[in-house]
Amino acid sequence: MTKTRPSLRLLSALLLAFVAVAAQAAPAISIAQARQLPLGTVVTVEGSVTTPSGAFESSFFDKGFAIQDRTGGIYVSLQDNLGVAPRQQARVTGTLQDSFGLLLLVPASSADVKVHGKGPKVDPVWITTGAVSEATEGFLVSVVGTITQAPSSDLPYGYKLSVDDGSGEALIFVNVQTGIDLSGLAVGQEVSVTGFSSQFDTHYEIDPRSPADLVVRIP
Image (cartoon, rainbow, N blue to C red; front, side, top):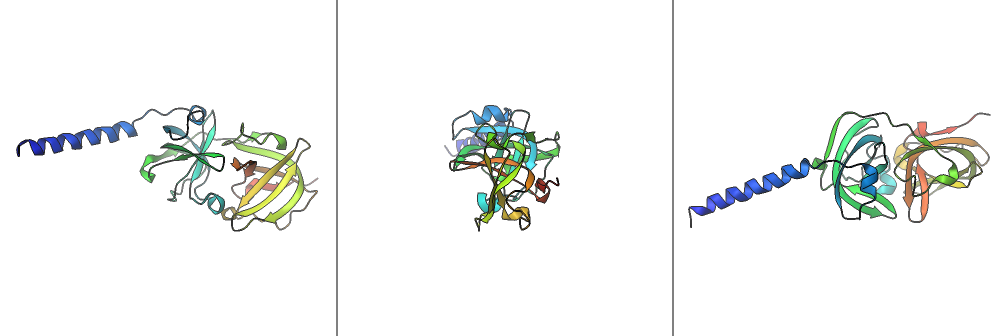
């Protein structure tokens, strides 16, 4: 019996190594396909980074980022700040989870995120303010509208305001880490807003990523 124990241990170690390698080599599926799968499913997706690490930390309570491919986008929730930036290409394996209505991809560890080179440029999808919904969730989007509700504090999470182009109000949520200055904004001003199409509870919203994402339009 003593002679077989090392062999069994070696076999077990090899089997675990094989499983780990197989998991890392799992074929990637499109983000749109992943978004249709049940919560709790482990998937591998790949896309270009659209939202940098930690930009939404004050309301998402993590240091994650968002990616997008030709079919859709998704937020990757991580506690570690990997320092990824827009246009980098990332391959992520994780579990589909829900956070207050927003679909997340949650890797087991930072090792399940592979950042490699530059990905395709992701241009925002121009939509009407009233179109911010489940259909746009995960995408990088842009709207132009008039401020209908002035910026108000929702600290420590961030700030919120509403804009409308005549099709319905869109909630804009500004996280603290973005460094966006809202002090000069007032009802009646026309602004263009680009950001991650997100959701909190029953509210759909756009989360801008940096000061360049929220611009007052001069008549």
